[in-house]
Length: 330
Image (tube, rainbow, N blue to C red; front, side, top):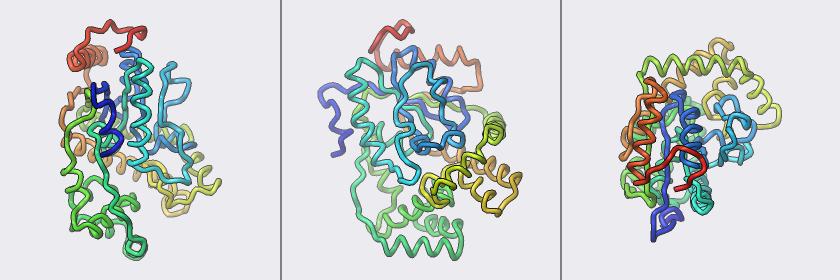
């Protein structure tokens, strides 16, 4: 049984979750909700954990946090990998601590597996590892390319292949390794998890018209370049973070690395990043669509109307009548 499954078995603690694809508007909405519901925010993003990876991960700046505590940001050196199991472990300590302070734990993010694993207390059994198998798959990728490795995964685990990007070589190899070691796929293991939550759970999902979202993604990439994404990636490489590090497989980093290595022009790298981000947003939505218990909100509509709607959803779910000010706790 995981630590999350053991949390407060007598009375389930409340947990608010805000999910949605990149560029859909989670950050602004999360600040307003956190202020209204006396919440502390836990970042559910697999790249924002890394120090110095700010622009490419769209990390909220300290001065933009409006005094609201944000957790699991800048907690890991980019030389070190960070996993979903570590995310679970951190949340297993954070959520009771936030609750004990009289605050509402509030996960905000777009990394589907991270968020879902905590929301439903997934128990990831240690299936072991096979270093020789990993090396063989890495050599296959070097010889035939990342897309060919992803195609190998697609042949045995189509679900995982759809969720992963070809450049996310570590996770592609791990999915292949799980099948190699157990004879069952990662997708089957995820489907086999109990979809019951150790929390009194309220999940809000933000979505919007696909064309509007894609336009926002393109604008965000242009803004990242203007704010110094190239310089950020160069700085990481200069300080010794290898291009194949887990952290550098994040969107915005692997594409700019190709430019800095001379494999692409800057214009080509930017267009690749826009395309990859649009595809990533599509995969995010596909992941979230298979989750249950989500209250979907079209964030392209009136912001204040949406905010009032969400307040009503949260009040109904948690069965509280809350005046929207930060002086009250749940």
